[in-house]
Length: 293
Image (cartoon, rainbow, N blue to C red):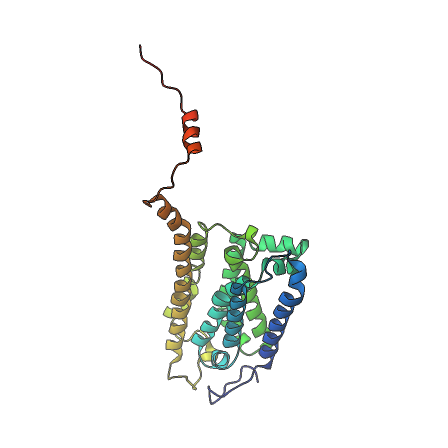
């Protein structure tokens, strides 16, 4: 029974719906790159890259890890910190891998050029995507919503789908397959840094709240002896520190990718040799010297 509290937190529970979903996604991906891809790309162009395939594999591993035993069952009935770890994997780690796994030709076939394209273009504007994603983060941490979702399978999966889709929108300007919708490398550090600011609110609230915020997790069967209060504080730490470390690492990466290359070139002792044509061109542009009387 969904949302039931078991005496043994480590008892294995199968998730056939997740297994079927992952099998479908793998089959669809293989079919797309084996059958559709060769007809969709120009001759001589690769259908997928090794990076695409590795990122897809990583995304599927994260999906299975976050949505099946043991993390899923402990997250739903025993530890809210495990629930937070689950959300981190589904909203911060998996979506960029999904986008990096998707070749641009495949995404263009899925989106098309009509109304869906216009909606995607609007929803992936940096401000819109950031606002929608952070609203989703806030909503999924409201106590009545959390307590209700762990008791209702449809609501639970709907919230997870909502979180993943809004996360995909948030990551689209950073690593999306549509290069025309990406922001510049100079803007990416600022954009990602701002994504680490909003979660500070629910993270701080969880860390410093008096009493147990989520009543569903205030039950006698404990995992590793973690009390409900400590579990709640650990969840806040995972949300703030875990998410921030990941985002700040990307901030540093994009900052140095944008500015370090120019700095290295400008401060290198190596100089390209001048050609005769370059020297002649400079002389032609310079005014002829005049003699002083």
